[in-house]
Picture 1: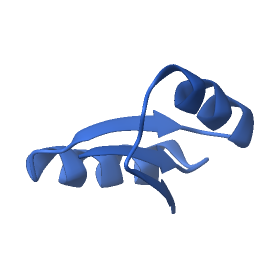
Picture 2 (picture 1 turned 30 degrees about the vertical axis):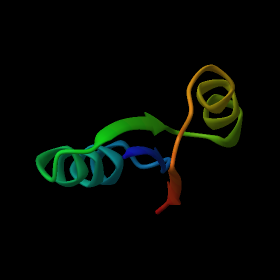
Picture 3 (picture 1 turned 120 degrees about the vertical axis):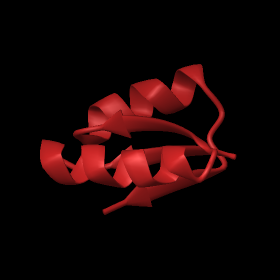
Picture 4 (picture 1 turned 60 degrees about the vertical axis):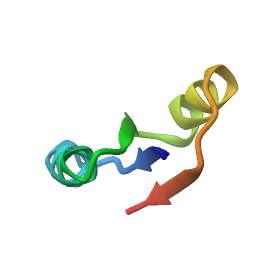
Amino acid sequence: MNILVLEDDDHLACATAALIAQMGHGVAIAHDCESARQLANGRQFDVILAV
């Protein structure tokens, strides 16, 4: 499963992404809506998680 984490706080975003990766999922981080949109245009995500 590919998951996009949308969170502006870098520490929280990285901690969340690390937990997701430990569970064996693909993960990407976006710190704002514009970067999330750009990532979503280039890749397919199963879940977008706004923390």
